[in-house]
Structure formats: structure tokens, C-alpha cells
Image 1 (cartoon, rainbow, N blue to C red):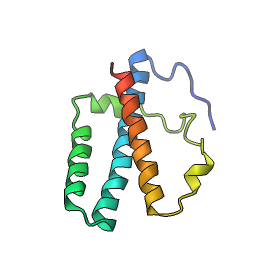
Image 2 (cartoon, rainbow, N blue to C red):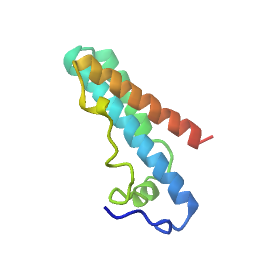
Image 3 (cartoon, one colour):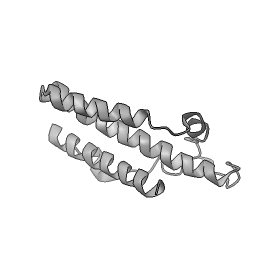
Image 4 (cartoon, rainbow, N blue to C red):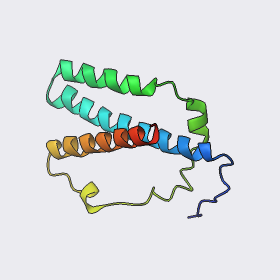
Amino acid sequence: MPSPSPDRFHAPQDRFWRVIDAALNRAREGARVVEDFCRFVLDAPELTQRLKDWRHRLAHLPWPRDRMVATRDTRGDVGTTARTEAEATRRDPWDIVRANLARTTEAVRTLEEFTK
């Protein structure tokens, strides 16, 4: 796998938008998994709708979407192959929910820190 070049992005701001883009994606993905659990496992329409609304609000934040997408570098991303043992182990659907709530919480924390 090629190592990322420090010159890959010309402006330091591009690296900032990579962080925001990745964190937004993680937050939305985690919320979607929990939304699907609420919808298909719990049959909870109110929770499902609240999660869907929140996920859509994330998708429509007033950030430069085109710029964020342009700064993606999946092939050069040093974190795409990093794995933990816990990722491969889910005992039951509640483990999936807990893991995705944690994923969403961590992603929102990243957004908070990088947008202060």
C-alpha cells in the first residue's frame, strides 16, 4: 500500500476537511445502524424518525461538501486497514447497537473538537 505523501493536499485546510468528512460519515453510518435496529428490531416508529431526522440534519450541515469529497484519499489513508478484535465480535444485536452508539458518539466528539 502506498504511503500518503505530505504534499498530497496543498492547503492545510484540506486535511481539516478530511477529518470533518470522515467524522460526518462515521456519525451518519453509526446512526443509520441504530436507526435500522429501532425500525426493524424494536418496531419503534418514534425513535426511528428521530434518528432519521438527526442523520439528515448531519447530512445538511452548511459545510463545503464538494471540497470535503475532493479531499478524500481512501487508498492513501493509513487507517483503512487498522482493526481491533472487538470489531469482529458481536454477540447479539444489542452489541451492534452499543458499538454503533459508541461510534457515533466518538465521531460527534471529533466534530466538536475540530470545529471549535
